[in-house]
Length: 415
Image 1 (cartoon, helix red, strand yellow):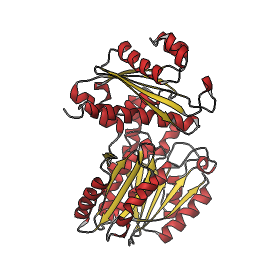
Image 2 (cartoon, rainbow, N blue to C red):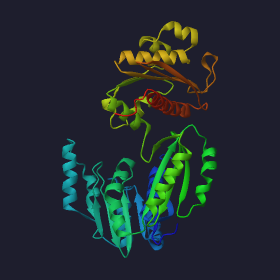
Image 3 (tube, helix red, strand yellow):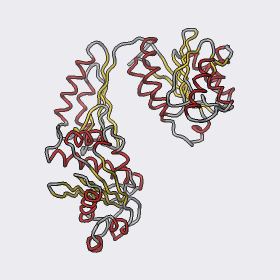
């Protein structure tokens, strides 16, 4: 799709160039811009160097309507984004009294005295408007000058993303009015990416429709985008067709997450959950607590990374001796023990080999998921790539999928 509005992203930070930090901000912003009718032309990463950053900003302003910077808004001498924007625009920095007051009030609330070098975060130029940052000390900047717009955002993603959604997006919609662009996502599991690509091939030929296929930790996502006056109707039709095509495999849409889905089901039924993990290192419990309703259903999690710990929490010793710690029988006992120890309605367990070793003569990547509830126990065997990171993350996701499967089987998916 072509757009008359052009944008560039400038990621600021020497640590990005050295590979010390992965630039997730640029990919996040790149995914957001198309839905505002703005076409991204370049992403540039630049060091904390005054001359280099000024040069990059000048080049970006000569080419594009919108320049978005991420990073360089901290309080130290090497946080140069504000200084370079001022220099490129030929304007002087000055301390804004209201920003200074807000900054000092923030430090007072934290019970700390504000270091004087933080005053750098309270400066503005005449063309800049401050963007509030409730999650940090660095306000953003919105700058309009000479028919160009510069948006300066803080580097930490937990600060940048809310500022983008709450402060920047509404301003961009007014500043760069464009055609309606809408997007939806269908999330699938237990179907291979190649198979998904094969099934959606006819949709690539549809007018006014863009299709993207993405492999994610929780399955294969199909993203479809339409623009123009009939965008919503196009998406409705496409969504219905894709749902019918992938009906056995669809588990969610758009912003759905596994943890939110299962926690909603459990909370609506007044049921509680407990976990015991080996091989996932707490990732399962951690992902569950990401759900907004987790406090209403999640009793807690136990990490049992050794046979001794499993024994201490109620797994029978004879099961471990007879079948090994990585077995369906032990996964079943772990789920039952978690349920009993934490007084939960449902116990969920993982036990697996996360590394490259072959304990008990079993292959790397072998794992089991166990579930215990009022109706009995269930176990599933899983096999993951022999990589510690992959095995841990996939193990946590697989456990949530199995829990979802069990709740559907028991008819516990509605209030």
